[in-house]
Image 1 (cartoon, rainbow, N blue to C red):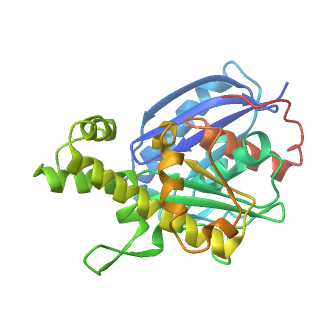
Image 2: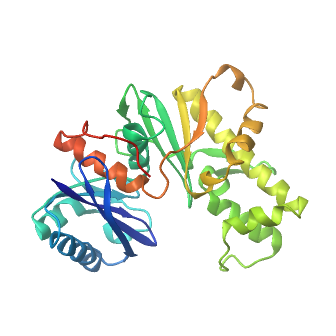
Length: 305
């Protein structure tokens, strides 16, 4: 049996695990990401690889990264919070250290890949995966193919402009992300922006505070506007919403409520649904990107969480 090491690199934590060719997660773990120094970043990965190689016959390394990732060469022009990888090629660097094949892909694209191969989009040829988190990310499938764009910037939905209540313009990253919701809450409540707030706390307090409830409703509206714009341009069969907030059962109904107030939405005919994969989306998508490059991507047996 062939096994693969998968890394899902985030700005705070790097998740890792061992998967087989069928997408079964055998074991997993995580560590704090060293975002600023290249050699320690690579050493942490190399240590994980060596540890897993003691037990499993590892055939390759699959990686999910934030930012502008050239999935063909492995070069990362910009890697979000992982500044150590800006202008670096983590594929060739890690291949030199481990003598294993390494394949890398953008994290939002990995989320879309996971849904396409064994999630809620496995029967779709054209769909959008939109992730709500620190920013608003996205992956696009059109005609059965992942759309990366001419310079690997496809699906950067968070950079779309939206209008605020006072007539100013801002990005979806600022206004429709969960981080944006938390910033708005802190501003409304007079809480220092440096103070840590759990997003779940905001939803709980909204049950007793109409002002917070209204603020959350405006947040849903901004998400709906972003979805409307993307749907009218790309005409997908389905739009999948990911990120931690997608676990809320009231997310889709609240977004749909605002969508139905927007011009011509009833004629767009697109299904809105949450992603199948949550915490494993990055690792699962990275694995399938590797298998596609290797030519073994049709070996999935069943969806897993």
